[in-house]
Image (cartoon, rainbow, N blue to C red):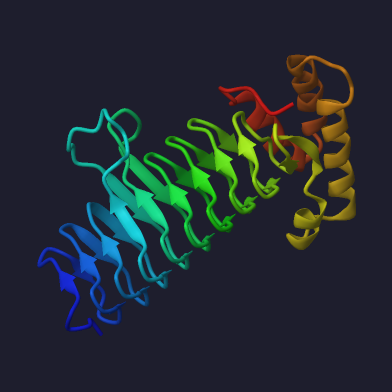
Length: 256
């Protein structure tokens, strides 16, 4: 199931049913799990582990050296989970020793055409990066996040679970869970109600998240004061604990 024109390094570990298309180049120390399909003209290199049932489309570049002037050829890693779709011209780079030396992509993610995942990024599960969305180095993307087309995320930012960015957003600070952002300059615009409904959140839970958003953004409280009040509410409302944990762990402050 490997096309005769593909070039595959002898050190590569490939499950028996993997498909590799024409003119693809698979470098040393790559591991590819069962059921994965590699299209034509794909480049995979570095110490890269790809799980099961992924589909990587033509002209993607996976596991390339970090775009970081501090990178000096050190051994670094990329790990991709299961059931991911990586579309045309996507670029994904390995980690650096300045962070944890690994770029991580979870399961069930869709990276549309021309998306970019820089060194040391962490993408959780069930994430959609629409066409040409780009992540700077060291970015953290939570589960069930959608980044609209041409969205960009500044290095070291975090984007919380179930959040949403509109097309063309420029995210330079952290985005809390459940929050919808957009515009230039990018600002919060309520909670991601449609996304929460699609993920099965109850009406009661969505109402509590709305109230938390109003406390965080509409009450006039300082951020620390709002977090203190949210922490009290989160003792009885599990959905709010995710928001409190995120806010207390934010290093760049939040879009507000």
